[in-house]
Length: 277
Image 1: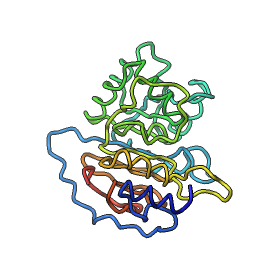
Image 2: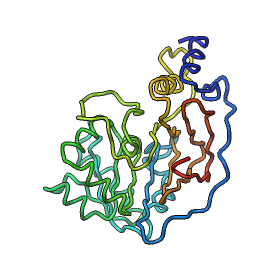
Image 3: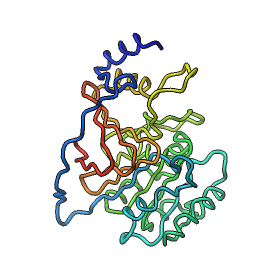
């Protein structure tokens, strides 16, 4: 797609040129607000991470502070859900993740060790949803009848940590995943733990010689058909910590808040905003 057609697509979506690499001046987020979480109600706690790696760092090595912020003082053990795995086995995925959490002081066990997945969710202190293929993840969550079970526990105050596919399914649907549909889930509706779509692994532009759509072009297409839906794009290494009705950006690369007909908003590290913004 050439630049002229791209601008036409952005115009059709009422999406500003600020979303695109050639026009990278973006609006800034509004000042942080004070948390006014209602007393007597459970406080929702989520950590939604773009990726399991940042640059050349080892697996999940960038996320120590993010994990502690979500879990410390709220859980001593985590229930790992490896359902996004396609190439590695669930056991291999568990073996990769468990040492990371044990090093930080949290016991970790995979849900595939349990005969009754719903009972495992019901007794969990926290849930960790690993990355991989979002279509496979959502299909397996439906097959195990866990969509409602996980949502109820998280809305009741149980911490939820997810990266990549595990972050994507925290939104209302998985429609802003980057993955190939290797399987077909019964629905694209996901956990709906935050009121906006997540686009993990966001990267601006495209490398020289690449003639496929850039991430900006794909999101522009999304807004042509879904002009009222909000999207939060997370670059690799960046996460979003949600506590109650507010969220805070964590990571060196700013997140982007996107909405049809509105300027793209850059959300640098430490930016705090209401989930309804």
